[in-house]
Image 1 (cartoon, helix red, strand yellow):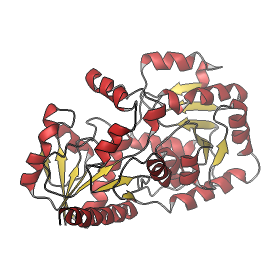
Image 2 (cartoon, helix red, strand yellow):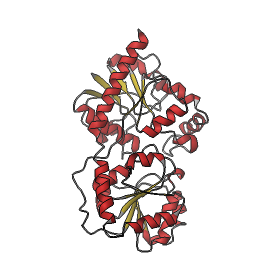
Image 3 (tube, rainbow, N blue to C red):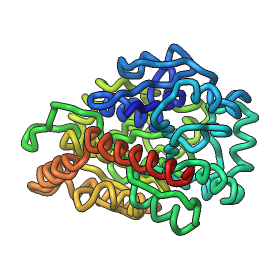
Image 4 (cartoon, rainbow, N blue to C red):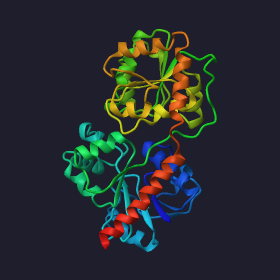
Length: 361
């Protein structure tokens, strides 16, 4: 099966969640299938696997309306897009579109890196569910990364198409923490600083943990940094890294007491599994998606309660508790792999081919 994968959502400097998801799926799928990538910028290739590619227009270009004409000429057996916004007018191929989450209906602020016109359209788009229905019903199959999001798709009746799971997974690593090895008292946060991520509660909890350091790893605007610094009880114990490499991230995970993520809403929560895959315990907000991803291995807390966060950290100081959480996380993370996700995507592609043929019969 010749699978054309839309890699135009890959970043050019560092991965975000969507970018990493697409790149890892492409690499895993290309190990067994005939995969060709669509890119829009040659710089994207630095973050993508060594797979054949074709350069076309940006997905944010007005030419996206007619992108199916270009893709028709490539004669794919099926096309996969890790987003739901791919142009499809006039397509002559089966299509899998992906919806990761419904976060922006409750949290409408768009990602800041998008151009202003796109941000305005983003806000309008999320004022009602019917535009989402129009987009998803253009596909033959809709993929999503969690059972939680699949349930929300059904609840809001967002599509008449089959909805299938194509899960996320941690980056492969051979390093595993020794549960008995010394560790620092540092806590890590990996993720964006958008309001729904609720980083404020993590920072406030530091006032109840005088012996701990908090490392905020992702890139942050100067304005957002000032907002969080104003909440920090001790500026020297809150470290803003402004972005880290994969190697730096792994080193910090291997040294820390726990990864903390207190998001109010999430499509998946990849840092949870990334931390668990190294044997680092996780303290997470008690929301359905984190329960799905972390199972019984994470320590769950009220995301609005700094005292609960501090209590969870202190729990890990009890005899054998940290080692127990570390082992539980490793076991939980072993259930996820990109090979398994590629198998799910392959089944989704086969389903799309069958649905496309059925609807054209």
